[in-house]
Image 1: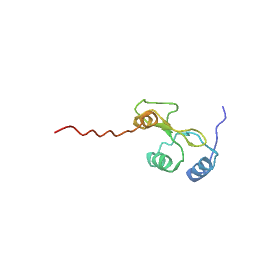
Image 2 (image 1 turned 90 degrees about the vertical axis):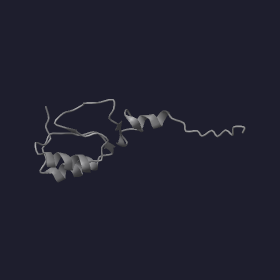
Image 3 (image 1 turned 90 degrees about the horizontal axis):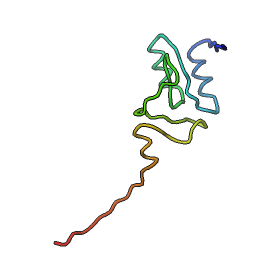
Image 4 (image 1 turned 60 degrees about the vertical axis):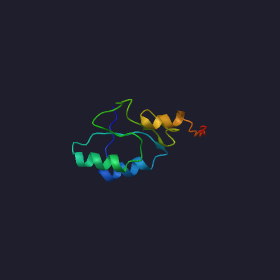
Length: 93
């Protein structure tokens, strides 16, 4: 198994955000502060911390950059299938 080694967290963020595709990165920092920093600064629709490929139907899923065409799952997906319309009817008095 190939394991990537990085000098520090700044290199991880820099290299991840420079990719053409906004692929979801798995990360495994034991330090929760680093995990939150990664989640807040990475340009990815999904960030897994100490796990990989875990989904919940209620959680939104979508791509950044060239890795997706929209949002699926969760409340955001309803926007893809909803056409908004207003109908006003005057009732006789």
